[in-house]
Amino acid sequence: MEESVVIVGAGPSGLATSVCLSYHSISNIILEKENCYASLWKNRTYDRLNIHLGKLFCSLPYMPQPASNSTFMSKDCFIQYLDDYVSKFQLSPRHCCLVESAFYDESLKRWRIEAKNTLTAENEVYISKLLVVATGENSEGFIPDLPGIDSFQEEIVHSNSYKSGEKYKDKEVLVIGCGNSGMEIAYDLSIFGARPSIVVRSPLHILNKEVIYFGMLLLKYLPVSIVDALTMFLAKLKYGSDLSSYGIHQPKKGPFHLKATTGRSPVLDVGTIHKIRNGEIQVLPEISYINNAKVVFKNGIEKEFDAMVFATGYKSSVNKWLKDYKYIFNEDGMPKDSFPVRWKGENGLYLAGFSRSGIAGLSKDAKAIANDIKTVLSGRKENKN
Image (cartoon, rainbow, N blue to C red; front, top):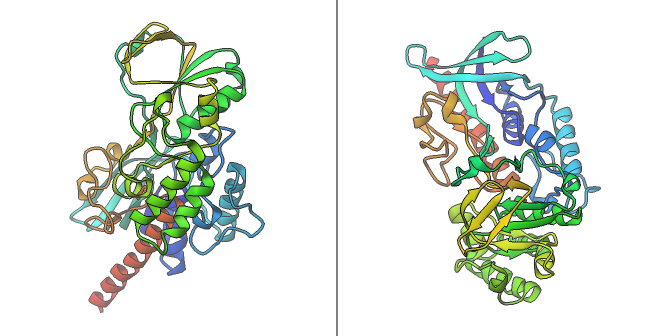
């Protein structure tokens, strides 16, 4: 079947792009490999997760967050918002539709998308003028190949499969990864009576959600350098001038500068720092090697663990099925170009959800993609006439 636009991925990026295209009366179809939309939010998040950014920065196009929602929403509240979004705009993604191949057919001047219905095992082919990759940055959980990891016979779990610390009571658990997920999982484990340790390899900024919200509001009016100085001052008042004695070091560059230039977010503290200071969570440096249940760290500490949770992020899987990925992606499946043209490639290829700037960023990209597609299709009609 032929469509004007095929969107691969029914996460917030794909949903937003579909709505923006429909706003311009551009026909489109969403293909989603899972059995539901927003599967990352619905199936691969831990129970304690809350939205750390204020709701002002968490709206999709053409539907603001309800006034009744609290400033900082729970995961369930945000999922309800997504459900309402799908219902309001009558979106109907094709679920259980696994895209296995997509390439640009030079003879047809069209994209050919080959997919498999995972319920019926039937093969499906879609032909489209334009293709939007909306699978995002969080396609597959990434677990690094640490020296000796194959010898660890206890439980290994990625953060996308972790739900709560309830079953880890009284167990020694090592959390690898000190981003927001890692820090919050360590906190969750401690709440449930586990004995968590967390690996912190790199300098990081620690802020609370109120400070980050304040900073994001200020960015509308002030330069990044001034906002960074203010937020770092507030963080110093909250956490003290130096956490290095606990194994946590602060970067030289400010949190919003790093977010803009590297995509690395500050850690939004949910109570983890208090537990680190109280000795309920131990901070450990980089791992040297693993020998069965024993983990040896760079500082010479050796410790045995009952489980390891890898909060080491995700990797893009787009290069596995997008045969002409070099139009827009590098070898790691990430955008070649930086802001502001990161969302557009060649031959009618677009990408949504790779901006590393949250819901607000993907919403902005969805609108830009739809506007550009409108211009492209309008130009083709004029050329035919």
